[in-house]
Each structure stands twice: as structure tokens, then as C-alpha cells.
Image 1 (tube, helix red, strand yellow):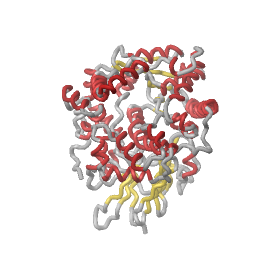
Image 2 (tube, rainbow, N blue to C red; image 1 turned 90 degrees about the horizontal axis):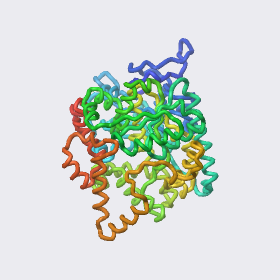
Image 3 (tube, rainbow, N blue to C red; image 1 turned 120 degrees about the vertical axis):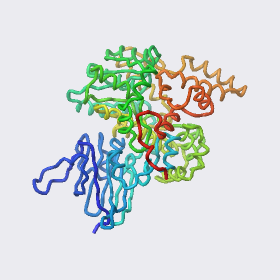
Image 4 (tube, one colour; image 1 turned 30 degrees about the vertical axis):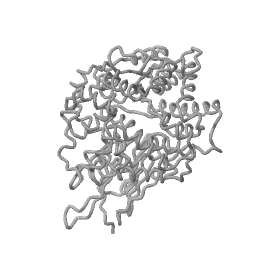
Length: 562
């Protein structure tokens, strides 16, 4: 007899029970929100998968997928490479002497919390979210509640309660004998992969339109170029948000006009943002989008809300953000210093990701966070060479910040009744990018040239590189002048102060008006804290957990911290 009773609480109506019904022989829809312990296989996916809990099948499966298989003695939870739909689980004590312990499984934060006997916040996880914007590893903000990580499967034995995690799709670059070093060959591979993932998206659109958040950067430019080359500009509604008249608005308008793509501006006026942020609507959005482990990704919530109210877009349209497998490298100097030690790589991870309050030294000294980084480094053999270092730093960034915080923007889309797709994180583009040599993938230089050539085809302009692209940058000072200024300031010892001052000014005069979301300290105090090393998101994370970010939100105030 199993010691654990399965309490399955899948809230989304999109889950399907794939196992045949014993009486009818037909597939049945999982009862949304109704706890159940019926054995079977529940799947949520874009495309059929013959074996959704088989690691080999998951590794090559295109599109989005999550699965829960309840067997006679084991439960299997499967998550795709995107972490498309979060899955949570927890073993709860018996509610009475006659009851058995429960294995609670859910896809919803509120349902998960409601199933707990004594919900409490994990103080260690709270500290990490304040510093990083997410909770790393399999932990969540709730004590004793776990999440299935990106590209992973969790097997839980119903007799012992033992959980075993395996990884099927961790981002890892090819070894030297398999990597592609020729830029032309690599360009062809990337374009073929882009055709595959974008073609699949377009084939599944039906009557829906593509909603494209258009920034002044490279990633959204790549999507614009591909859509224009394939004659799909009329299927797209592009938009940009920010302060009225900002340079990012003007650059984005020029990009859309260059290919004849419909474009809309959404003005981010601080007073209007703050008024919207005080509403119950904003509180409901926060509750539905933090997925128990990350700061809600608020940046385009207001813009999409406005476009829906104007009737520019409608429910079921597909939001296509530029989230990508490209550009997840940091601390590039370690590639030149190879071989490096595990300690050097671990320190780089902590210093890069635990920076929001400017107290990385405390994070480095925290045994809780150090142990989780150590566990991640143990996922594969470590040689310390440049390729290993690149794989570790980028795959950690993908698994943690990318899929938990950046990709978490899709929770806003779902909350507003919109669909979404992340083609540049799908299997073909993912695998193609990881074939590129270090010199082609460690920076965005090659990527910029690749996009420049696609842009030339899209516009018929004959442009051939990133230097010819309309592009938004924080400053209009050219690179050569910036380099001379930095050298002069470095020679006098003033460079760190100058960089911190510029960063502080830019944050408090943000072109996107995101400084409007600093809600719990006056601007002079914020300026002083920014100068001391705090980041914009650091104000957001601390206010979010204190329930002071949105006045109508009360997610954590009633929970003890243990």
C-alpha cells in the first residue's frame, strides 16, 4: 500500500487526461480545480508527444509541454525546456490520525497554498528573491513547496516519499570536435532553425494575430525581419511603450515603418502608471503571475492592458516577445583565463545574479545559496576550460533568471487572455545556437551581423551589419568617444563614481518610466541607495515581498516566515 495519497489540483482547463477512460475508452479532460487522485497521464502541450514523461522524447519535442503521470507506485512530473507552465509539489502531513500524508501537485500558486496544512514563507528563499528576483533551484517562497525546474523531470515514490530529479534539456554547448566555427555555416544553421520554429508558429496561428513588443534592440528586430521577409507584416500588431517622445519610441517606429508593419505607441506616463498600479486589477495580476518563485514581470502589463482596452488586440492573439537563448553569457574574462576553478565560476554566478541590493558578499557567504550553486555545478563533469565555463554560466542564466523571471512575462499575457510563443527558445533554435563556437556565441557581435543581413533582405536596403541598423542605446555618444572618456576617468580613479552616477540618473529618468514602480521610498532616498549599489529591481523585490508594492496586494502579510 502507498503511504502517500495523491492530491492533484490542476487549475488550467487546458490540461488533458491522455490515459483512456476505463469505461468509455476515450480521453477525458482533467477536472479543472477539482482535487483528484485518479491514476492517469495529464498533459498540457501545443503538439502531441508520444511519451511526455520520457527524457529522450522531451529533449527533442518542439513547442510547449508539461506533464503529470500518476502511477500505481510513482508520480512523474515533467517540465519542458521553457518552463512553459510551472508545476509545484509538496508532501503534507496527515490532516487527522486516520488520514495518510498527501502528495499535493498543482499548476497554480493560490491552489497550492490553499492545499497546505500550515503555509509559511521560507525566510532563506525570501532573502534570495529580494537579492536576485527569483528563487534558485527547486525551492519556492513557500516552505516545503517545490517547483519542477526547467528541462527536468521529478519522480516521487509514493511509498517512501523520496523524490529524484533528472535533467533532459540543460543548455550546453557542443564540445570542440562538434562545434561550428565557420560564420557562414553557422548563419545558415541559425536561419534554417529560425525558419523551423517561426514556420511552426505561423502554421498554428489560425485567425489569431501576432502581437510583437518592439524595442530598439536586436531580438525583436530579428523577429520583424523574419516576418517581413516571409510577407507576414499584415498579420502583426507591433507596439512600443515608454515615455512620450523617447528615443526608443522613435527608433521602434522607424523599424516598423521600414517594413510596413502596423505599429502602436503606448505612453508610459508615471502618474497614469501609478494610478493603474493601485488597483485591485494590478493586485490580481501580481497574484496570478509570481509563480511562487519570482518577481512578477510587470514591464509590458500596462501596455497590453491599454491595447486590449483600445481594441487594437483581442483575446487569443499571440504575443511574441524577443526572449531568446542568445546573450546569456557574462564574465567573459573567464573565457580568457581558462582553466578556472569551480570557485571562480561559482563566485561569478553569485556576483552576477544576486546583485539587486548591492550585497553580493552576503549572498556569497550564505550557505543556503552557495549549496544550490554547488549542486548546479555538479550536474556535469568540470574541466575549467573555456567551453565548460561558457556552458555553465549560460545554462545557469537560462535555467534560473531566464525561465523564472524573464519568461515569466508570459504570465501577464495569460492573465490578460492572450496566447504566447517563445520560438527563439524552441528546440531547433536552441540546438543550433549551442553548436556555435565560443568566438561566435560568447558575445552578441556575430548575432548582430546575422540580424543585419536579414534586415538588409527585409528592407532591400543593402545594409550588411549591425552598425547600419536603427538601434536604441542608452546614450547617443559613439563608442569611440565613450572609450576615450572611460580611459580618462579610469586614469584619475573616477570611473566607478562616474558609472554609478550615470546609472543612478538613468534609473530615475528611465525612458520606459519604470521608476514609477519605486513605491516605498522617496526619490532622494532612492538616489542615495542607487549610488550605494542598489538596482531598480531591488526596490521592486523588497516592496513586493513586503506587500507594499501594490497597495491592493496582500500575498504575504498573513504568512509566518520560518
